[in-house]
Amino acid sequence: MAIEAAKTPERPPLCGDAVAVDAEGRATLIGGVCADCGAEAFPRAPVCSTCMSENIEPKKMPRRGTLYAFSTVHVAAKKWKRPMCIGYVDLPNKARVFTHLVGQGLAIGDEVEVAMGTVGEDENGPIDCFIFKKVSG
Image (cartoon, rainbow, N blue to C red; front, side):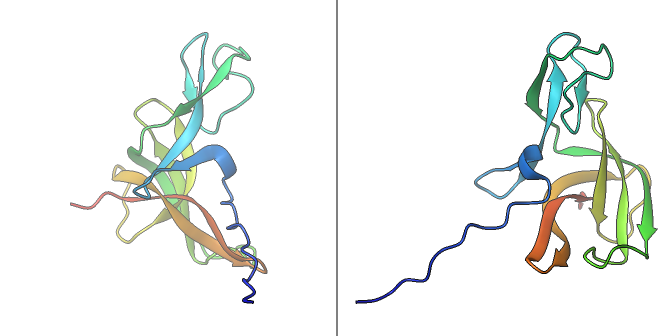
């Protein structure tokens, strides 16, 4: 009689349910839209920052945006990859996302796209989260 090793569930990403990955492996951020005024935000908040409504529904965010600002961080907690590039991405729906950035030659104004990536490692293994990377070509 063969004994199978117990299968452990994959470690969930750091971003939890704020991102969905389709069958082709493409990531999409899940933010919120105010059902009263239509303002969109990421991450999804319990209260709309525009009209103070609590009527917020989940909504898929655009996958591409424009790099607004970024910086390279050389000193960070042990579990984070170093140096790490972090910054803000403006999405076409007026949401601004704080994110890890991946790739060389980034410049303000670049078109970037959301993906999943490893942003660090701890005693439980790799830490995965959404990242943005420069759109090639």
